[in-house]
Length: 364
Image 1 (tube, rainbow, N blue to C red):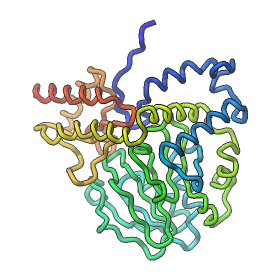
Image 2 (image 1 turned 90 degrees about the vertical axis):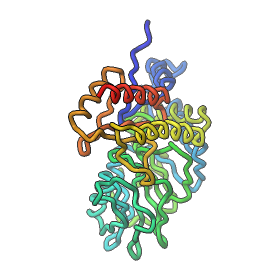
Image 3 (image 1 turned 120 degrees about the vertical axis):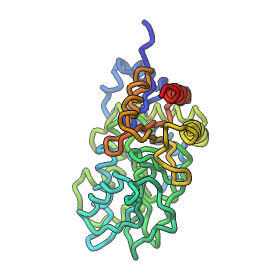
Image 4 (image 1 turned 180 degrees about the vertical axis):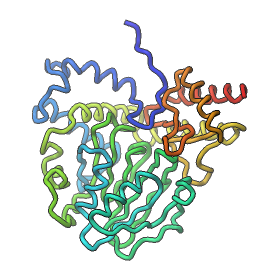
């Protein structure tokens, strides 16, 4: 049987997965190893799946150096549910949470928090259409925030925090890391709670990773439904109800792939190389322009660019689509193009994109 056709997938998410992971998952659909039962058919309480989820947690702890005082949780609902679950548990009545506004997702997170308490905008780049990450000196925190929340990478606008914010006083740092989770080394001790949808760097859609300092459970400020209580998942080891078993299995395979690449330092070097190559071309091009200027917090994950003319953008997108370069269209709210270069995206795809851009530019 001939190998299936594989295009270069620049999708912002669900996104490209390592081919070796797809092949391994496919082999186990009919039977997980020698069990005679497909990986999607195993009970979440049976020994085969318990081994999978324990292996996934162990790899997360090893790869990112997560200490025992942090819980590793596998949830559902994506980052969007975490927007509400975080303040529901930790923003008390009469309290304030500080939000760093750097894009659409941080705005949505703050909107959910306002259902439970006050929010304070510590900094914002909205006036310039989120084209940069505000500098630390532009950030002003409220007097006594319960926590400080930021979005580490902004898929729509192509910006990324280069260093973590430093919360004031007893506030803990909360982060939506959905689009750059495990793309670079991580110092988890700077965070109280970090969450991420898996569908960009860790696996398929449907799994949400949460890493949280366990002492935060003592700060729970109100009674919440069982399924929206972090304590439920900490005590149940993410098995209180049926979790997304297949997604967790694929996530485990992706973690094994990351480890085999050399861990987060090697993944970071690979991601830097891919993005640098593309930004260097964009900075030199007479047709294509990067959406984010140098020094403004360019993302290694989502490289956004434009020609400055909608018709030319559309012609380019058709041009590259015919060459097997797929899903390069920018988000509908900003237009242009977006090359998402997540962990599993191959460097050869960046080379082909640059070659195609040069060819298109020469033809204009």
